[in-house]
Image (cartoon, rainbow, N blue to C red; front, side):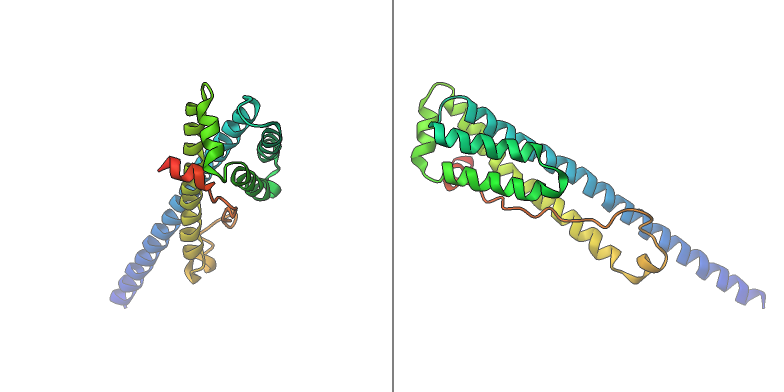
Amino acid sequence: MTATLIWILVALVAIGLYLSWTAGRLDRLHARIDAARAALDAQLLRRASVTQELATAGVLDPAASIVLYEAAHAARQAEEEQREVAESELSAALRAVFGEPEQVEAVREVPGGEEAAGELAQAVRRVPMARRFHNDAVRAARALRRHRKVRWFRLAGHAPFPMAFEMDDEPPAALADRAA
């Protein structure tokens, strides 16, 4: 009888340790999602800021400046529910303005344009990487949260279900070539 109780106790301790380890892993994944989301937000803000600076610098034609400024402003001021759409519209505006290499060359020829074009190329290149890191962390957390043991024992606690950030982040061809 005592041997049976000891084995039951050992099994319960092992199960408890396993559940504790799984809860810790899930907590680390949620922390990774938070860090990746902060990095993504920083890169999106940087891209919008650089775009606004370039739009107000007077190096682009007035129509392109207005398109870029309005798209960047909308992306910076968007509420969380509309953020993905606003960022996608900024990507589309950047592709429309910098779709041709001649536009990038025109920016580079003006004083200070080389730095502005380089900074925009870096910002445009970093957004897809930051989004990919965020979405990879979300995918890993979702996969773990789908396991029965996580649902049955409520190991996720009160953490909201992680959501991926889906947007059009394809860079303009002329800037993507420059960023490489």
